Image (tube, helix red, strand yellow):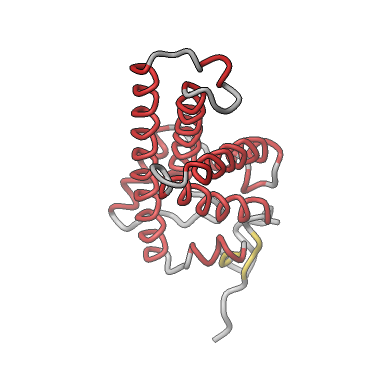
Length: 201
C-alpha cells in the first residue's frame, strides 16, 4: 500500500525557532540559581526568539501566521470538547486549541523574560540597570519572585502543550514531533485524490 503523500507545512524559520526555544528555555530554567551568566544569555535568547516569532506571525507563510491559527474562544472551547471526545477534526496547520496554547506560551515567555530583565536591572545589571538599580531590596525580591512564578507557569503551559501534542498524535495517528523536525505532514485528501489544503506550500 502506498504511503499517503506529504506536504510542506512548517517553514524552516518556524522549525528553527521551535527547537531553539526548547534549548534556550531549558537552559534558562535549569540555570536559575547557578551559572548566572548562562541563565542571562539563555533568557536574552528566549526574548529574541519570541520577538522574531511575533514578526514572523505577521509576515511569514500561511501556517506561520497568527491569522491561520488564532481563533475565537468559543471555537477553541468547542474544539477542546471534540478532542476530549476523540472526535476532533485534523488540521494541517495548528488546530484551534494548539493555536491558543501558542499565544499563551508567547505571552508568558514575554512576561517571564520581561520580569527577568527587571529583576536583573534592579541589581544594577543589564539594559535596565540605570533605571531600576536604585530599587529597594523588597522591590528587587518581589520582581525576582514574580519572575520565578512566571517561569513556573510557563513550565505548566509547556506540560499542557506536550500532552496536547501526544493526544493529537495518537488521535490522528500522526507524529507531530517528527512534523516539527521535517516540516512535512500527511496531506489530507478529498474524493478524487485532491488535497484538502490546496494552498499549503
